[in-house]
Amino acid sequence: MGLKQENYIREFHAAWGDGTAETKPDVEKILSMMADDAEWQLWVPGGPVIKGKEALRKEIEHQSVIATHNKCNEVNILSSDTMVMQERSDTAYIMGKFCPHQMVAVYELDGDGRILKWREYLDMADLTKKMGVTQDFAGTEELGGA
Image (cartoon, rainbow, N blue to C red):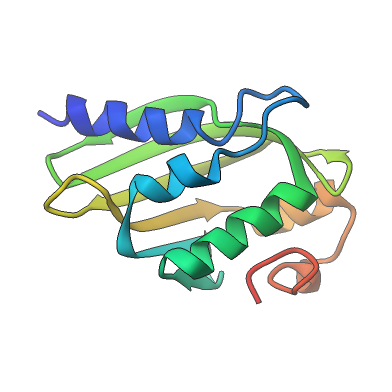
């Protein structure tokens, strides 16, 4: 149960990049894998929730400017027919600084198997420290999510 859903999420993450400077997120592929009314909470707790494909496009394009060399590295994955939970150890250069970070991502899927809700649980204090900014910077226009 859930293997199809797990592979869908793996394909979704492959669209974000392979960790090289040459690859950028494939925005069209990413959006095609999300429901029209999809929601992405950038971080839990307290992060902004991005709703709808146009807002999601804007956020992904913005993140493509500040984050490069993106690579989603799966550690563990659990699933059912309508949900996938993934522990990851991601890498990226954010604002020019190498920022490895651990997270747990939860994906709720709609009846067509597309991503309806996506939440990422991560330690923003750790991530902003690696970025060289204060936690107050997270969620601003410069970083994304405001």
